[in-house]
Amino acid sequence: MNFLSTLTRRNLILLAALGSAGLFFGALFFQYVVGVAPCKMCFWQRWPHRIGIVLGVIGLAIPKALIAWVGVLNMAVSTGLGIFHSGVERGWWIGPASCTSRGVDLASAECGLLDPNCGEAIVLCDQISWQLFGLSMANYNAIFSLLLMGIWIMAARRAA
Image 1 (cartoon, helix red, strand yellow):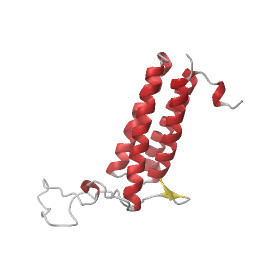
Image 2: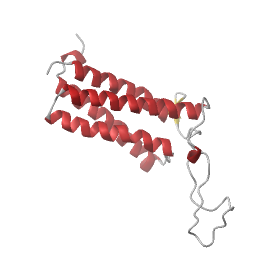
Image 3: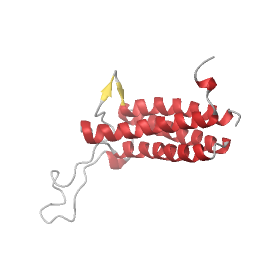
Image 4: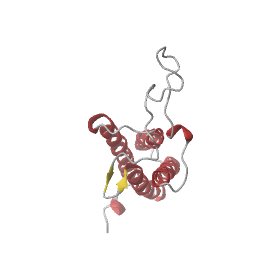
């Protein structure tokens, strides 16, 4: 008998929410402590984890299967975003145009419209800014989101 099979629905929901919290706060750690600037798609990938935390709080108060199935859908979106971003990083497909250009501050009087050194730099979605064992943060997000989706599925299928 394994550890997960002994957990109640409420405990599985808590575990999934804590997993999302770990990924979300880990992203904040890398941004603010390590100094790895996130791209636009990185910010997109944070939203499902925020939602996962909220679903966890709701699920602790009302541990219904419906909430767990919403958690499954939420982590499916997170997994999809991670896979999409991974593909953009690896050059398998093209990402959003807003992640591959440089922003221009039109409100600044000293900036020329065509000055490439003017404006705030945009972090490119198709460049890997950090990796471990050949995997980027988007890769890890996809993998861990898939695992969290499995935990949400177990919570949804578990008897109340």
